[in-house]
Image (cartoon, rainbow, N blue to C red; front, side, top):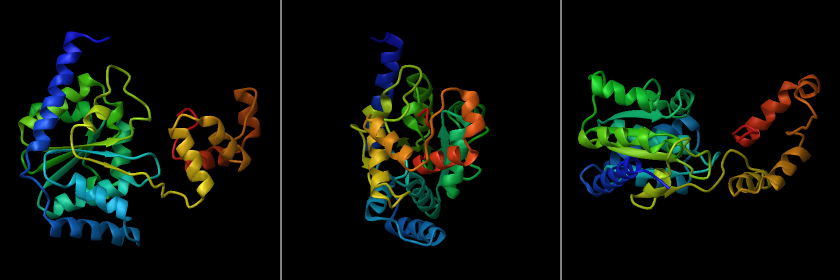
Length: 265
C-alpha cells in the first residue's frame, strides 16, 4: 500500500538516479584514485583488500550515482575514505550526510577525508537551499546508512544533487535498520545503478565471530547470541536493576566492540 505522493517521489528518485548513473563524464582518473588509496593505506599501515579496492573503483567510476553495500565490520569506512581521498586528489569537493546526526558524525570519524564535512540530510538540503553550501559538477555527496532514509527525506536530497550536477554515493546495508517512514529506495537503487558489495568481515580474524555476524545479518540471532554468550561478551539478567548491579561496564563495552552494534540492533 502507498499513496500517490509517495509513489511520485519514488519514481522521481528512481528516474534521477538512473539518469545520473548514465552520465558517464565524471569518472575519477586512475592516478588520483591510486593516490587516494595510497593515502589511506599509509594511514592504516596496511593495504586495502582486493574487494575493497574494487569497491573504490566502482564508486569512483563513471556516472553520477553509485551504491556501496556492506555489513558491519567489512570496512565501509575505509572504502569511503579512500574514495573521498581520490575525489579530493582529483580536485573535487566531498560531503557526507546521514539521517541521524550521530551517524553523520561517525562517518566523519571513520573517514578522515570527510571530517568536518558531514551533516544530517535535512541540514544539508536546508543549507543548499539557503545558499550556505555549494554543490556543482565537481562535488560528491556520500549518504551513509542510506537504507534508513525515508522517501520523503531522500527525494529532495537526490533532486538537489542532481539539479546541481553533483555525484551521489549511497552507502549501507538493506538488512539493517530500515526507514521509519515509507522507504525501500536504497535496496531498489542497488538494482539500478553501479553497485559495489563488501562481504569479508575484517574487524575480527575469528572465523566463529565472523559467522556470528553473518547469522545476525541473515536473521538468525539465536546462534549468534549463543556465540557471544559463550565468550562472555553477552550476559543476561531478569531485571534492569539486577543487570546494572551485577554486570561490569566492560561486558557491555565488549559486546559492542565485538559486534559493531548494540544488542537492540
